Structures are given as C-alpha cells and as structure tokens.
Image (cartoon, rainbow, N blue to C red; front, side):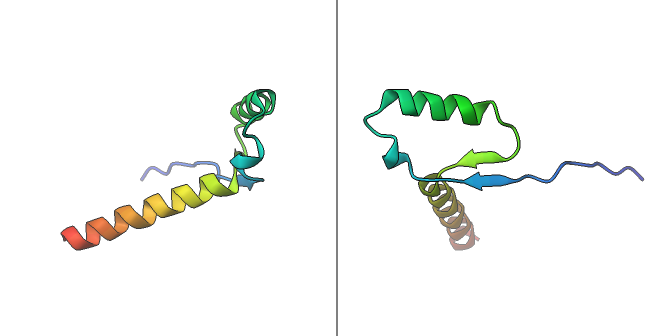
Length: 66
C-alpha cells in the first residue's frame, strides 16, 4: 500500500485589491511578493470571495444537472 504525503496548504488573506488600484508600483510590488512566496498562499479578501462564489455556483450547477 502506497501513501502520498503532501504539505498542508495555508493561506494569508490580506486587504482588498481596490486598495491597490491606481498605483502601478504597489500592484507590481504586491504581485512580485506573493509570487515569490509559496507558503502561505497570499490572496486578498475579494479574491477569496470570488473563489468561494465560483465554488458555490459550480456545485449548484452540478446538483441541478444531476
């Protein structure tokens, strides 16, 4: 019997993307920083909300189609 080990995923939820709008330097700095950090995955509150809505919508569609 084989077992596979995976490290636990962790997330750091910070701020909102609207706080970065209009400042290209802030956006570039934030993107560079979070792309260079593997753990925890860094995302904003509105990105987390988007992911949650996407999951709920897709689960709802699967239930309706079944």
